[in-house]
Structures are given as C-alpha cells and as structure tokens.
Image 1 (cartoon, rainbow, N blue to C red):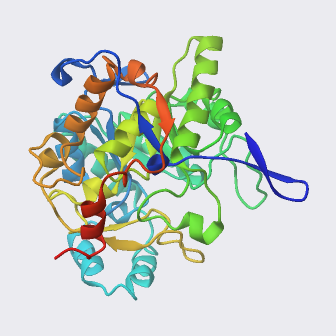
Image 2 (image 1 turned 180 degrees about the vertical axis):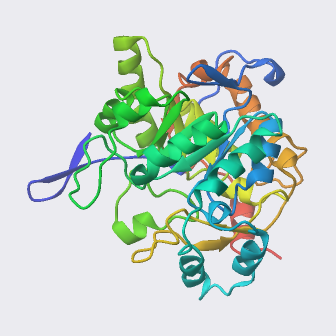
Length: 386
C-alpha cells in the first residue's frame, strides 16, 4: 500500500528486521532434525551462511576455516590479498590507524595495482585445503578476473557492486554482458546487489545461480547516508524472492536469494530466511571471530573508493572463534553467537522442516517486538541501571 508523501507523490511502506516478528507454528520440530542445506546452482552448502567479500572478514585462512565448517567465504579479488604478497603487515597498519585517518589510509593502501598472479595464487591456497573457493570482483573486471579465478580452480564467482542491473549504461568503459558471462563461465555465478522485483527478475534471466539482496544495510556500509538509496531488507528480500518464484515457475530453474547485510543477530538471520532468502551473507558477525583477519576491525568494500567512499572502518571487537559464532556454545546473550543453532531453533518453533518451509512462515508487523515487556533490559542498555 502506498501513501502520499506530498502533492502528487506517493511512497510504498517498506519494512526492516526490527519491524516484524515470526509467528510460532501449530506444530514444532526438534531443531536437530530440520534441514538447513542451501542450494547454489548444482552445489549444496551444508549451512546457508556466506562470509562477505570484505578484507577485514575473509582472507585465505578464514576461507579455509569457513569451508571446513560447511559454509562459504568469499574472497575479494580487488582487496589487499591480491595487491600485496605479504598482507599481514598491511592489516596491522589498518588496525592501528586512528578512526580519523582510517579511511584515508585504506584509500592509500588500495592504490597499489592488483596482481593477476596473486589472484591465481590465493585461489590455489584455498583449494589446497579441500574446500569450496568463492571469489568476487566488480562488473568492470568480471570477465578478466573470472577467467583467471576459474582456471585456478575457483568454485563460485561473485560479481558485486553497490547497485547491479542488467541494463547499465556507460560510454567511458566496457559494460559487461551478464548473460554472456554466466554462459561462458563453467562455475556458478552470483550477481548483486539488488533490492527490487524487476531487477531481480532481469538478473535471474542471465542464467546466474544466485542473487545478493541488500543495498546499504551493512554495519560498515555508509551508502544510505552518502547516496540516500536503499530498501529495508525485509521488503527487499520478499520482493526479490517473489521474482525468484516467478522465474522458477516459468523456467524450472531455481536462483538462490542471498540476503546480504543488515543482520546483526541470529533473529535477523531467521527473519531473512522467513522473508524468502535461501541463505545469508554476513560480515560483521564473522569480523568478530578470532580467525578474521581484521583484528577486531571491519570495513566496507567501497571504503577505499578514491573519490566517494561509501564505507567506514568500524571496531567490532573479537568475541569468539568462528566455530562458536556459527555453532556455539554461545557465551553472550545478545544473539551474535551460535547463529546456526538460532536458525535451527527458530525453524523448529515455527514448524519448518526445511529452508523452503521456513520461507512460508507467517510474519506479523511488530515494531515493539524488541521492547515489549523489556523495561529492565532497555534501561540497562541505556545505562539507567547500575
């Protein structure tokens, strides 16, 4: 439903995670017996979790650890790992920088040219561990970098930009044809990011295996403040999932919807799946692991942009191992640990035996869901209780 926001101007109401709640089912299931596997092209992930292609989250070592636990970590092919042979000192320099100078430092460090030899080397490093390897690049470099990564043994190629459409117009540089790219690549291609039904449908028609949904919701992303664009994640996921269903009924081909950004707790992840996602791409939660290369810091992919940064370095701290963040045991009560356990328990309580059934969960508009009856919790967070 649209409402008038001014003379002759209407706006559609959109919803984020904090404005909805999932309704318990009329049956319940043992959480250990629900199926949380995620399809991706012809592959299947044991858990529906992807780690964001951000330098403070994923390096080759983290990708190996994530893969061994059943998830998929995406390595940024345009980050410091393909610009520097010895990247550990670079990570240390970023971590030690003051908040005021962090963005300028990152801009400076990312000026060094990308080495195509390092692209192949990083892929091979990950593959030596016997896990799936996923890498990412922006559309302008997708054709070249995709070929190098595929030849080196990559299993998944992600083409990612702030806003991705099939009909991009540019005279200054070559515009990639996603349809030709997906057909040419012998490995699954994930495209993103998008937030609307029409764009999701057009991207699905290119032959991609998955779509990233989310523009600006990430904790280290400042796109919404800098550019003023974005759609709250619940509405964005639901709209793109509707496009997936239409395309599936029309062609028989299933394109996985991956919620990307804005999920800080297990509850948010559960709401993403219930809104229609097949899996989630998470950054900040994994940036807090002991295995993360950022040393307790996290910065967005667009942070190093030379003229208009749309990300910032944030301090997230280190709260546990990757296994604890994913599978527990949780040592914190804020929903940031044992994310897999949270998803399984939620699915059990709504009576969903699979991810597909979870997508059919009843949702209610509930803006007071986090504060109703939580007087003392709210007061404690505000520092009113001693």
